[in-house]
Structures are given as structure tokens and as C-alpha cells.
Figure 1 (cartoon, rainbow, N blue to C red):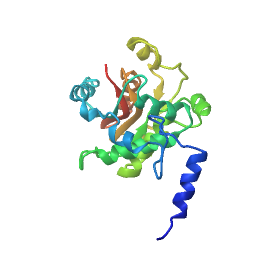
Figure 2 (cartoon, rainbow, N blue to C red; figure 1 turned 135 degrees about the vertical axis):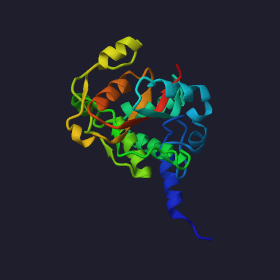
Figure 3 (cartoon, rainbow, N blue to C red; figure 1 turned 120 degrees about the vertical axis):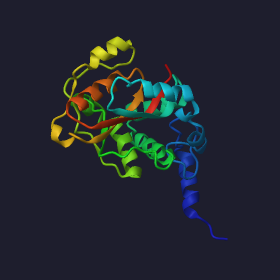
Figure 4 (tube, rainbow, N blue to C red; figure 1 turned 90 degrees about the vertical axis):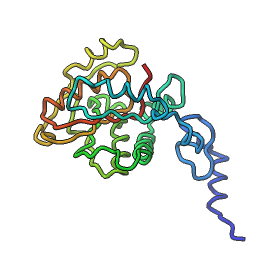
Amino acid sequence: MKVNLATYWYDFVDLLFPRCCEACEKALVGSEKLLCTDCRVTLPRTDSDSALKMSLQTKFIGYSKVKGVYSYLIFTKKGRVQNLLHALKYKGRPEVGVLLGNLFAQEMPMGTFPTADWLISVPLHKRRFQERGYNQSDAFAEGLSEITGVPWSGTLLVRNRYTKSQTGKTKEERRDNVKGIFEVPDANKIRGKTLILVDDVLTTGATLDACVETLIQAGCDRIYIMTIAAAQQ
């Protein structure tokens, strides 16, 4: 019988330095990476909540150029999805965003992923980018792009002012906090284009709303919105 020495080696390394699932924190085994098999199957998808899916489509109903809103997972406080987002944003694990982008694109029914010219990530201010070392929305956009072939950019839309975190703010405070903070450096690159605007989590929609206004003013033709997760309101 042929012995797979590599398998034994990986099992030995896992015993000494256990790798944990970023969602449930249980030990990963074998070829599992970032997510355990159980979490890959059972993480709460928005497809399982018809009311949430409908509410997503109405969040940007005032913008005729927004043609669809898609979120992959359902966000709940102290849940597994929050653990994933925390790892992505605060534990230096951009590969979590890439993986979730891959999974979301792979799980969308054939022919339903929007046809677009660009995936555009919601930008961080350069100061926040330097603090974190990466933009979590870039990672998600990269993952989507790897599967769909739609090119992504983290520079077609920029944030021109540093703002405090949106966490803990009311809906009105969130909107005031991000009003006028985005700009398009070169409108010629998006004029007449179809864009997919990408972010990590959709809550009140204030940040995405500000991005949409800026992109429309720059002359894009249509916009789709895609996030890792959406919070139930």
C-alpha cells in the first residue's frame, strides 16, 4: 500500500500548530483552508431569507441606474459571519475576502452574474489603508474577478477624506459621515460603463449610497452592488 507522506506531514504540523476555521474557530483538518467543510456548507446565505433579499433590492430604489443588489451571507452580531469579517478586516487575513469572493461567484446560478466592465471596490482613505495594509473590499473584488473574469480596480473610485468608523452611528449620522467623501479621478474611465460596486457588509447602505451618487455623477451607465454580507434590519 502506497503511503502518502505529505498527508502524514500535514497532519503532524496541524497537531503541533493547529489551524482554525475563521468562522467557527474549530480546528481545520486535512486540505481545509480558512473555512471548515461544515461552515462552507452551512454559513447563512441570503438566498435562504426571501424578505432580506427583497429588502436589498429596495435599499437603492431611488437610483434608476442601480440595477441589482446582491449579498452573499447574512450578518448577525457574534455569529460566524461576523467572525469572518473580523478576520478579514482586523486580523490581517485578506485571503478570507478572496475566498468568499470565489465562493460567491461560484455559487451564483449560471448566467446570473451581472455583465460588467469593472468591479470597483469601496475605497479606504490612504491613512486607513496604511494602518491596515490592504483594503478588505479589494480582496473580495479580487476573488470575484478570479472566477468571473470581470476586471477589478481599487483606484477608479477614491476616498478624499479620512472619517471615523461608521460603527455605532445612527443612519443619519452614517450618511453625514460619508457625504461628499468619494471622487472619481478620471471620469473618462467609467463614463458609459457598467460597474459592480463591491463592499464587505451592507447595513444602512450609507457608504454605498455615497459611492453610487459619485459614480452616477461621473457618468456611468449602470451599477450593480455586491457585498460579502448584509445585516438584517
